[in-house]
Amino acid sequence: MSVAPIWARIREVSALVALAGVLAAGHLGVRALSGEPVVWEPATEPSACELTHEEADDEPAATSEAIGVTEAIALHGRPGVVFVDARSNSLFAALHIPGALCLPLEEAPALLAHASLGLSPEDVVIAYCEGPTGDRSEALAGLLREHLGCNRVQVLEGGLASWLAQGGPIREAAAKEAAEAALEGGRG
Amino acid sequence: MRWVERLARWAVALVFVAAALPKIADPTAFAADLGDYRLFPAWSIVGLAALVPMLELVGAAALVSGRRRRGGAWLLGLLTVGFLLVIGSVIYRGVDLRCGCFGRDAAAEAVGWPLLWRDVGLLTLIVIAGGGARRRPW
Image (cartoon, rainbow over all chains, first blue to last red; front, side, top):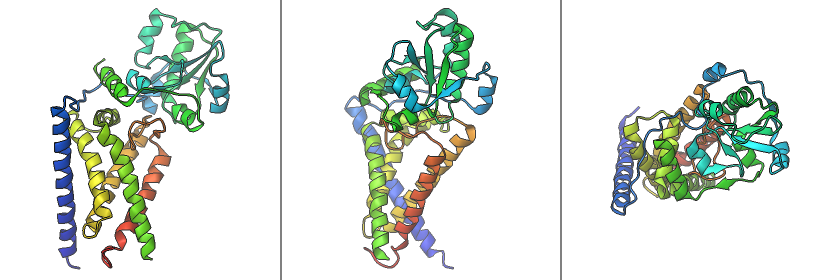
């Protein structure tokens, strides 16, 4: 078998990559010159919903009931029903269930130790994260029960992904606002 | 079956253009999404956020062009293999993430098995799209 066609492909792909590289550099340059440089800073907290199954095992006992998306959508907006977002501040700023409390899992122990967040033991609390594994919302549900004595904590099955798929109401930041929020989240 | 290849080419090109444009419009948001994967060194995030959508765009343009079609198919194929590895790593680590594949929109999909199978399907389509280039330029 001749290697010539392989070399031809490598050359072609290299040329395309080089072209993309030039365009990317140009794009970055233009944005920098127009006062909108592309910046990214590493987050100090674990990223949104980032929690391995092993880490989840280390969290307080979390045996929350799950609630289906359809039922959760029906409950949304009713008095005494509180949605709690376990994702990072930046993702919450970009997209969340209207009226939800932002309570990133990493900050939850410290926050819950000093404040009730307006939650009472009688409230129906529905914790959610990005989905589909729901590790973060499970862990947060355990913390809520432990710190606030909330006894009706449920975890949204399939997380925000399922909520969106089922057409649940959503509050979304404008793209620029979301990017700024993401950066703020990264710094914080 | 030239029409199948042509259809596959345009379908793949449209998918990659649709994926590239939101990321080009808002590279900062895409950089934040890339950072969430926790796979890439910090110094590479901004560069990747600018480069990946350009690779998608250039690959798509090449795929529907006359002479560079095979090169475009190879580029998009390699890119998709890269995406599959990243998705596989996320599934292996059991991390919940939105993929950011088509920008940071409301319908952003969570990274998981459905996304992996979708990309396997896309890769199959790319193979079909690149298959006819040896016979005819169009």
